[in-house]
Length: 269
Image (cartoon, rainbow, N blue to C red; front, side, top):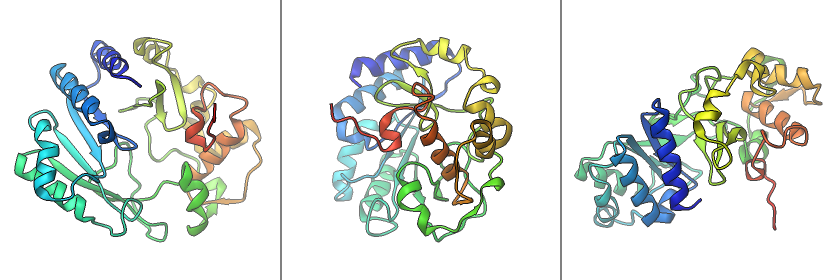
């Protein structure tokens, strides 16, 4: 994704008229620092509230962190710092502490978000954007493969709803570097480089969608039953069953269950 692509997406989001917040996430967005800063400036100028999510690898001291964050003062309304044992060797990293202190010094609203280890059970799964504090691990992507064996499993029939997203009236979508609009990572509603965002939104009919219709009506269990997908008897959570089922359906719905990177398939060409 190039800067002009980001400009186009922000313009289309503004025209849509229903989007209030733009978040720049990763991966790690600060790796492309000049493009990130320019994009944040454009989003702010367009009237959006702007959020930034970073693991703060660059915060090697509070003084350095202030230098990194100074250009974002008055531009960013929410700075979320990722810090947990998936990012660092300690739950609250020194970098996160330096970045949080620097943001406080600059008056940038800040929160630290972390993902719990598989053995930690949290009673309330998060819905939508992760809140500050510790959130439960969702077994999708690499977590479904690498971490699900460490978790307790439950009968697949229990996963009869989507606990994390409002599929009928979604409060957010994700845009990946390839232009795919995701309602959940790996479920594309269309590609903004191929079709205007307004058209993608106008054409969204979740009840009749080949993937989301089942997820809305009966969660991952309904998706398994609709397409008669072979399955295990137990899974770590709803995301684990959903992700595993979607992998089995990718050949049938290649334009929806995309891109390859979300599903651990990397094209070397």
